Length: 187
Image (cartoon, rainbow, N blue to C red; front, top):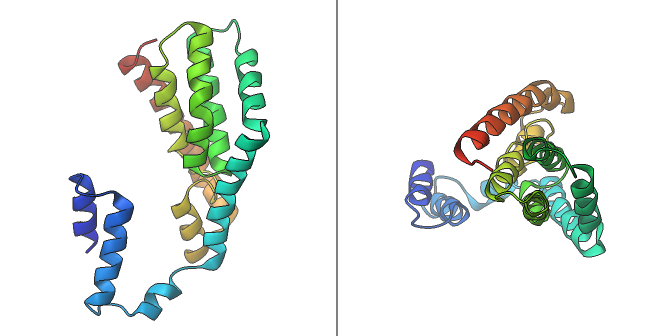
């Protein structure tokens, strides 16, 4: 079922969320698992945490905090080289992704990336790729990505386990992303 769901998503037959849900429903219909077993895997704390991260992101956008933060970021890199601005944007996005959901951060930071590129009179493409990469690299906390939360609770990990393994992984990913962006997406 897993291979089928991933394969259909990889072939663009349907989004991954739809294929995963269809796979789960098929497991129940084929009596591989019972509905009670499926429901027992849903932890209310995880669902509330995920919903809360999305709500915080919406609140930041609606309250104007996101706009104020973007103005502050643009002002802080004024006069610096596009590379330094790219690194700063990547780091800010990476830190925010550890605190909020990656999708929320990507939505909040994308307009900032475009405005930052425009203020530097360079192509926005490398800045958008940096946001995409940084928002996808949430390894240092259990809250940066939904699967981290699930693994955190079900695997019995401690918060510091994520920091100890995830922070070096975040830094490696940052260096690799900046080098790749410079090479494949010039300013």
